[in-house]
Length: 400
Image (cartoon, rainbow, N blue to C red):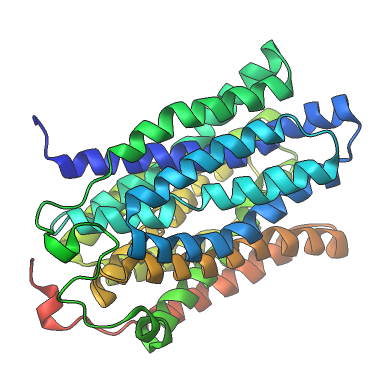
C-alpha cells in the first residue's frame, strides 16, 4: 500500500466516531420539526438525549470489555448494525415512549461501540506518534457537528424528519459496515494475539487488577472531573451569549468556533504529547481549560466570546485523547479496551452533570455566573487529581 495501514485504522476510527456521535447529537436538529409534526413535548423528545448519556456510560464499559475479549472488528461491526437499525426504527415510532426506547436507548448503546474500542485499536498500531493517532481518531467527534447535523437539516427541509432519520440510518449502514471490515490486528500480533481482544504475553495486570489500582482511580476521576467542568459551559454557552445580548445566529457561531478550535487542539496536543509526554501536556491543558472557564464570567462582547472560544475549545478538545494514551502506557494493550471503556464511563457521568447544574443555576440565580465559577473550581480539582498521576516506569518509557 502507498501509506502504512496504521493510518487506515486511524481514518476508519475517525469516520466511525464522526458518524456515530453525529447521528446521536443530531437530535437537536430534529427537536423542533418533531415537536411541530407530532405534538410531542420538547421535554419528552429531549429526554432521549438524557437516556443516550446514561446508556453510553454503561455501553462504553461493556463494549470496551467486549473488544478485549472478542476483538475490535466484531464490536464495531455490531455497533454499526445496531446504529442503523436503531435510527430506522426511531423514524417509524408513533409515541414518545417508543422514541425514547429506540433513540434514547438503542442509539446510545450503538454510539458507544466505537469510541473506546477504536481508540484502543489505534494505540495497538502505534509505538510512535501514538498521541497524534489517538487525537485524530477522536477528531471525528469534532467533525460530527459540521457534517451530520447540516445533512440532517437539509433532509428535513427537503422531505420531513422521518425520512431524514431513515436516510441517516441507512447512510450509517453504508459507511460504517465497510469501515468495520477495514479494522485489522497489528502485523506484529501472532498466535494468541491474532485479534485485539486476545491477551498479550507481556500483559502486566489483569483487567480486575487494573480497575482496582490507584492509577485507574486517578485516571478515571481526572477524566470525570474534566468533563464535569466543561460540559455545563459547553451546553449553556449559546444561552449565556444570548443573556449577554449577543444576536442568536452570532451566539450559535460561538459554539462552532469552539468546535473548530477543538479539532486544532486535538492535533496540537497530540503532537506535544508525543514529544514531551502525555502527562505534562494533560496537566497544562486542564489548567488552561479551568482558567478559560473562569474567564467567561468577565466576557460580554462577541469578540471576547470568540477569543475565549478558541482557547477553551482547543483546551478541552486537546486533552480528551490524552487519557487513552495514559491508559495504554499505564496498563498495556491487553486490557486497554476495558480500562479505557471504564474511564469513558466515568467521563460520561461527568458530562451528564454539567447541563443539569447549569439549568439549576440559571433557574435559581437568573444567570450563569455561578455555573462558570463552580465549573472553574471543578476544573482546578481535575488539575489537582491529575498531579497525582505516577511517573511511568522507565521500561514503559522506552520505544517499543
